[in-house]
Length: 339
Image (cartoon, rainbow, N blue to C red; front, side):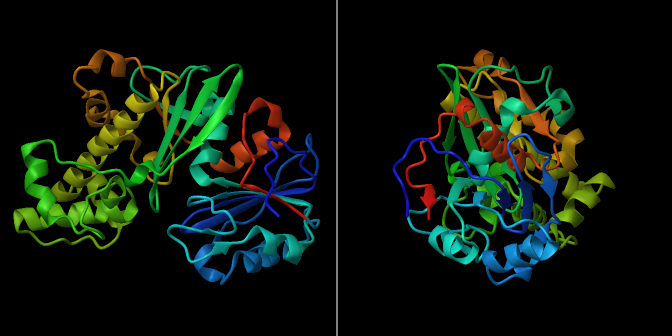
């Protein structure tokens, strides 16, 4: 049952998972000082339920039966169960407890888990976008385009880190330049609004490319986001513009959130797309969009931005929490279930 406890002792072995719209990544820690064991990444579409994925990937792989689960999920955490935003899986903690004989289940939003990893990242885990890497202290923000667009804050307060989950990827995204105003009416949209996630994610990049083609009366040859980025690398004009506009508006939405949080501890770019377009993000358009916040341009210039190149940062955040729970101020009410 869910508990209102604000702290808890985590039982080992612990199974960790980072479950997104496309992939699920699992890892296990047998004790707080032990070595993390990673399992093969699995595609969520290949399993009907999360229980089936755990059984096949972890238990079937010869791992010890976990006593606790600490999971990061791509969606807002529900009171009794969580429906992932871009995946048909439903995560029901009581069902997991019963199926695997668990003592605890702790659930985080996926970008909240990314927030947990930020203090532990090293220079080798980051690529600067701008003049400097983020400092060790100060409120931080993570935003990441992948299957969707996620965001979360990490507040530096009284010597502890306080993660702040959110759904910042669904805030409105407006045209700014004359070219934007020409392109916007041609953007295919799932709803009446153009949100951050409408164009700042994998499928959004493809929407943006198609909108540019429709605006110019040209054929849209690319049919996948990967084809768009490959075409941009090859110098194809529409693809280059699509990736450039993508970077500019990622900068704008990141800047909006940074201004909201006053993220003096830096803004971190996560997800599957940012590491693939490092040169585009470093070329200037991202920072220009990020800093274009009249009358606060000078303030925005002081906020560093960087790309996370750590292979499994959300899992790293969950592991940091399990090993050092007192480092973070996490209220477990509504996210902590026991047998």
